[in-house]
Image (cartoon, rainbow over all chains, first blue to last red):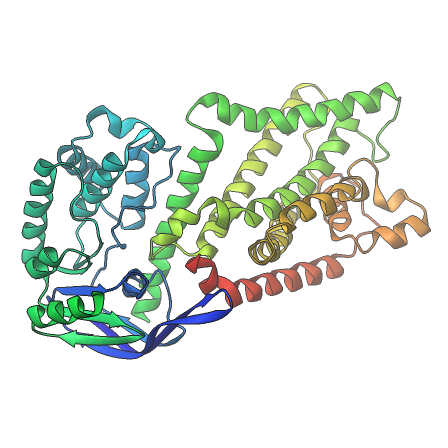
Length: 217
Length: 261
């Protein structure tokens, strides 16, 4: 469950202020998959971080129940000097997950092999993303927050991600930011369209996409 | 009430995970790294003990010069390292703040705990070496009081560390400034002399330095038969609580801003 009560958020931007959310309220119960659409800089990632709890609103209240993942994205919080496995241990500890179980799942899924025990600085962007994705899939959450992470690695790995994601979406729900309309179509029940501080809520995904495409062009 | 306990158990988990992680990043994966942590203060102290005995100076408190230097260096190092570690805690752990569970307060608390543990281990280790060398008679005047001073040192360091962290966040060049400000403190806190044996005019100036009180208190608890006439516990404790309070207040004011960057 996630609820925004009169939430406002703005960023100081040079001389002025950029309003991302202006007095926004919504409520979604358990099991609703939400897609977030908006042009660059509309505040999609900020909204996702606020849902996660990494950022707080300037005004208003955010209520949530159930366990939420961290916002999954390319810029995962890995320490470069530590190995993938050491980073994994840290994340397991803060989420009270079983380290042995998660390590096994991540090793199988990420296909990193021995590299899992090498410092993360030596990883390519693709390897980092694979680790991030595998790790988030290995820990159980009620709600997975995804920031543009689909489409990691080669075609084969993408298929694997999709399969894992589909499996997850049976028990958990997904809140995602994406620029890919197909991804939004595949996973969303509801779409939030962010523009100029306002949030449009669309039960009809196609309607949201049509509206979004009108803003973009 | 249930929420409160859940939040507390999450925080405990996060701080524990941060301590383990910090140990890894700071001392590396090799045993040599841990050894270095012990060797550095030992070398520091032995150098001064050597210089002092070469100059023919003896400890005004009786016992060895090495013990005098150690009982001055330990409270000083605990205070100043905690203040510096906390100052840099947020910038060093920025990536971790993307995890909603991890707060700026947590990274600082983890660093403080690790600093206290490290310094206490180092102190005990050096004390053991002194005992083996016959430079310490293996007596402690009041161990409970000694432990109390350790907490006061950490508290004072944490208070300055919190204020430092917020100032560094607002004015990034402040980090160097603090280093420069701390340099004279090294000579003005009574590591190499005993504050209560100084002339009244010097004592009047030293009085305002809380670290001088820390060291005097620590030595009073360590040396049998030594009660410092200089030490003002009330002043020190009031100072510590005030600094801690201001530090926590400042952090509270900017904690959301810290996360946004």
